[in-house]
Amino acid sequence: MIRRLDAFLPLVGVVALLAFWSLVSARGWVDPVLLPSPAATFKAFWSGMDGGALGFDFVKTVYRTTMATVIAAVIAIPLGIMLGSSERLYRSLEFVIDFFRSTPASAMFPLFLVLFGVGDETKISVAAFGAILVILFNVAYGVMNARKTRLLAAKVMGASRLRVLFDVMLRESLPQTFVGLRNGVSLALVIIVVAEMFIGSQDGLGHSVFEAQQLFDMPRMYAAIAAAGALGYGLNLLFLTIERRFVHWSGK
Amino acid sequence: MDATPDTVRSSPADPHAEEFPSTPPVGGAGKRPHVTIRGLSKRFGRTVIYDDFDLDLPRGELISVFGPNGCGKSTLINMIAGLIPVDSGRILFDGMLLSEIKFGYVFQNYREALFPWMRAFDNIAYPLKLMKVPAAERKAKTEALVERLGVKIDLSMYPYQMSGGQQQLVSIMRSLVVEPEILFLDEPFSALDYEMTLFMREQLQKLFVESGTTMVLVSHDLEEAVYLADRVLLLSRHPARVADFVPVNVPRPRGDETLSDPEFVRLKAHCLEVFQREVRRG
Image 1 (spheres, rainbow over the protein chains, first blue to last red):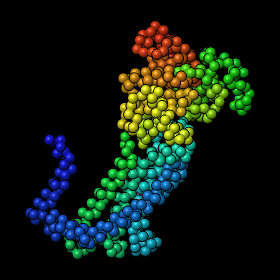
Image 2 (image 1 turned 135 degrees about the vertical axis):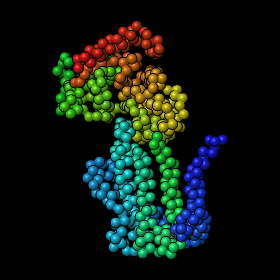
Image 3 (image 1 turned 90 degrees about the vertical axis):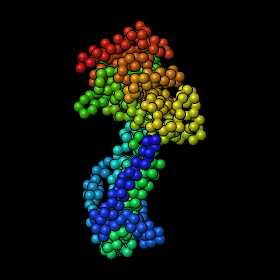
Image 4 (image 1 turned 45 degrees about the horizontal axis):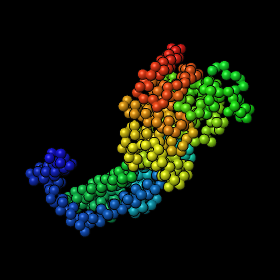
């Protein structure tokens, strides 16, 4: 009986948070202008998502984040495999990769604005730039850290270098590649939302949060924040599901 | 051993200086040698592991390699199997190079040697895929092997779903599927618990009797080395020499009663004596 209820454990935190939030707003401990009630926020969320502006902004942000991640993956995965399969090549480029990986991508906005102008291209390319380095780094490490015994086993069975690369190294790097993809998509979302707030944006969740704040429409602002949170969580979950499906041996 | 006639030595620069199969066997095996090792030298940094080492391994026998820690047991089979390069010397199989023969290698670490993304069956069939055997034939050959060995494991499982012993059995089957002329096993059971080790010894003995393949087994357990072997190769501390090459004339199939067989006990005691002499010499 108690065991069966264990499945509902993750809901405990959610219910507790909502209860505390309701209590705080009902008692008026915080100015309702700063913290609207959960009901008002949910109403704003629902009406916004159901054919309202929030739904449109949500789709825009999903589109930009997806584009940035796809572009980053297409560039970074083959490059990461190349760098990872030659440790000497990776060591020669390691400093450059680490340097740009450590550079806040937001610091690159002005540069990308000059390059691409004020449009989707800028937002997507800055986000892709950030994600590329994260994915590249992880893929390269995944390939480099392929189990030596497994490579030897393939070699001793007579596998050619190319065979070893495709049959063993690529598979071996998949778990780490997915770590890179998950980190990459999270970073891309962060950059996209920030970009939507500041660079002459007309839409997107970042724009929605910023505009609601400017208009002091707090329920709408909280609704947009919640939408951004749901998006981030959903993307992470999506990648985890794909990973479990295709990299079933990960961590085993 | 050290009194090998000079005529046996060969200069690597002149591969046709002599006929390998006709050279006198080294190590007193008596049978026609399968593997011929001449003038083998290997050093790691400043440590000389092998210096002008000669050895013949007889055909169709299970040879256990035993010796003090770090004497180069694994190094020897890794060099014979081409996993690590030799500094100098020649290793021939019936006068042929490693690249011309089919061989199998079983690693100690089965967990890292198998491919976790493939089911056990596909793991076993993988070497055939490398040999460009068509899919249908791969399946048939693998099924035939499973049938012949009488293995009762669900081979549609992934390696990580299996016990350690089952994984190592899959690993051994993978090395046997190509019908190798020689099989190398590097401490294949040392990562298993005792119960599984005993079971796997029986399995390996069965496979050996069944296939008649020449097998070279590195072991760190003297009882296991003697129990499984037709001949125990005892190595000295490095630079390694052959301390003794002991024939084990105990009938097969061997079982629990073998462990108390007087001849087995005598041979084991003899091997232990040689081993301890070599350890003390260090």
